[in-house]
Length: 348
Image (cartoon, rainbow, N blue to C red):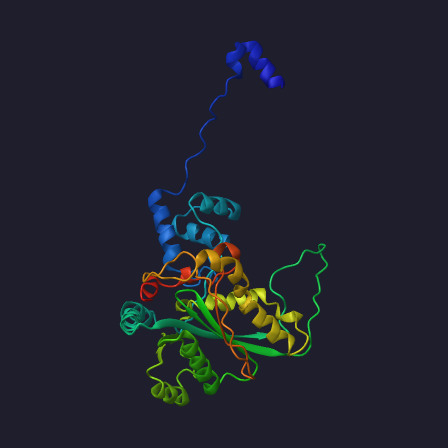
């Protein structure tokens, strides 16, 4: 207040006008050097440049700037500088060292369009198949609030009940799944393919990874005997990011807290309940959505179909359900919008 009063007495009302501050010092890193730094961060890892680990941390960027530009910056200053130029800290995606990039590109450019063309010519459906396992002795995902210095404790069973889930996702939003407790073998896989083909009501082109069971002699024999119903296509090895069924597995593990299951019966029940939860909205949405009649697939919301009751036996539950609308399943990452556009366009 004293500063404002003295300015008013000296200059009147003009002394209270907002004045522009003095410009700060110019950035020490030029635009050309900045482009070089960003290119190095995009094309290499600190481990490859022998200045750190596999992730670009603020400490690694400090060392990179010192080596390339010769400017010493603090870690806090580097963090502000990176945010100023559009960088944010992100959780990195994982890729296997064994993945062959040339094979992945060839599959996307050649094999995937061929599968699309064959499915369109046959009037068939395309289903992406994958399997995952849940164990009851795993800690629940996420974090829990607790006083500082007092680690929260979650009680889990000392036993190790385990269930496996096999699912197939179609590009129109349909989901087929089965929950089983025995080992994943060729008879289990072929029984699942048989049910998917029967419930789909038409020929199915199945896309799966290169699991040893998928390439086994028993599966090849079964496919030859059922060539008019099911055709199997294998993706390149070590490329789970190509399969749109993988986000369903991640969503399943994140939402089905396996540690709550204290016995072998509880874990399959929780898993089936999550996979079948999409059917809960069929009554309220079927009247407004209705069945699809257009030959052109849509990327907006999955169709909500009526219930498809299926018999159950020792193999587990094998049902056909469709995903909820996007606004009703905000946490789901496995919606059909994530499918490749070229595959979406192949569905009749």
